Image (tube, rainbow, N blue to C red):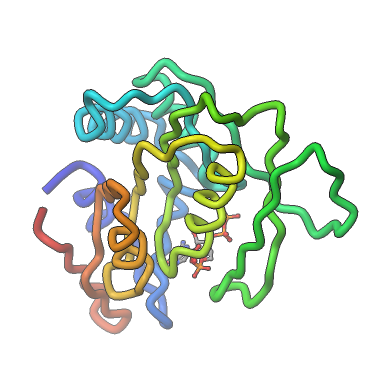
Length: 193
Ligand code: G4P
């Protein structure tokens, strides 16, 4: 079991509706030492890949991506969520539907910060249905860049996102894959990896 899985068992809280609260260490209060260990693990899993940029999405991906980036020595670009329909031609744009929040955001990245020369590692905190990831992949494709890999902190293995993204042929590495969780007992089970 890795340090993220151990921390989920210690401090994660299972809520009704298959929601895992990890706000005491991952996406509200942030444990930077844990993020650093996660960065080390991603560096191992993506060793030998030619990565020159990390792409994430606001809000909760940013903190993790910044610490992980120190292990790759590359800059971080984050996609901004925007409700505005007046987006000018200087931006790459993708639509992201959130099943959890039941809304749609346009996510945008300035054309200044992504190009065909970029070999991108995408980082995010959660993978559930995969909509956010598909938006980020489409932004890299619009720029003509290459997705070298995708690193996720927590994948909900019982939701379809992981399989969709792996079926597209990407190297997707999730540090903790939750197979099941039970709000009545608080029990969380991980996929062996
Ligand atoms: P998807 O991005 O994989 O398609 O998933 P979905 O639309 O279902 O998720 C929407 C938001 O809910 C995402 O955050 C995602 O990180 C978060 N989420 C999904 N499942 C869980 C969970 O079990 N626990 C927690 N804590 N979050 C979950 P977001 O609102 O887009 O981003 P942010 O602004 O919070 O970073």
